Image (cartoon, rainbow, N blue to C red; front, top):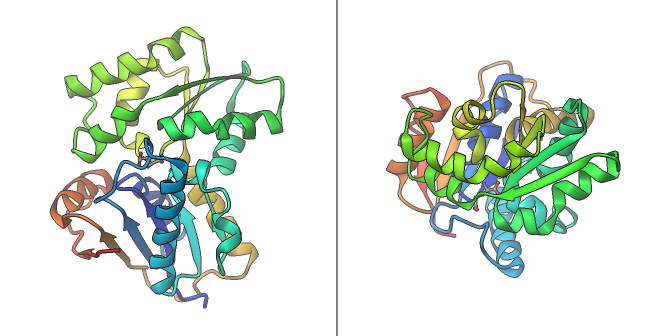
Length: 267
Ligand code: DGL
């Protein structure tokens, strides 16, 4: 089983933030990625729909024989909280590893959380932070348009549209004097430069994709599931909508121009 792939899914491109980190820490692991680009965004859908989509995404990855599943999606991790118990392989979402990292990072005890509307309404990050340290002040803001920006390739910090949307959503949090901000949706690190430029360098950004990848690597080590093959791992991408748009933005974000293995599937 240890040479099987790690399965990662998200509603779209956001889970690539976990892929990018996983390739850094475990370069010889094979990865199967599923981005549900035909049904993104999940973040403004009902709980019932999000749970149904998450189950279908995980089933698809299981059909590829994966040894672990990472829900690299803040919305799924916040809302489909029972998914873990239905799976025959180790699983992690993004909330706990990310909240842990934020609690370690804050110096003034003021943490901001941004995510989709479903994530913010679920209070998942807030609850996870307070369970670790109840004296921390948590300020939340949903930023649904960030997902559309990323899915449509508006990711440059030089882009005025990106700058305007960032300012509109983050103005209140900036005034709360937070020193740590959880990017609680895996799409958001893709525009982290614009977010950091607006908030200034004194605010530490916590990337949920990155923290989750680090945590998943730990789980694989503990369970003796690391790939012993020393050859570089391969990454195969599946999407439920057109391949070309995904490939274009994935290439920019991952800093590669050779992402060949992108396939369309219908769930
Ligand atoms: N990447 C998803 C998340 O982390 C958000 C995108 C969506 O709304 O589907 O929440």
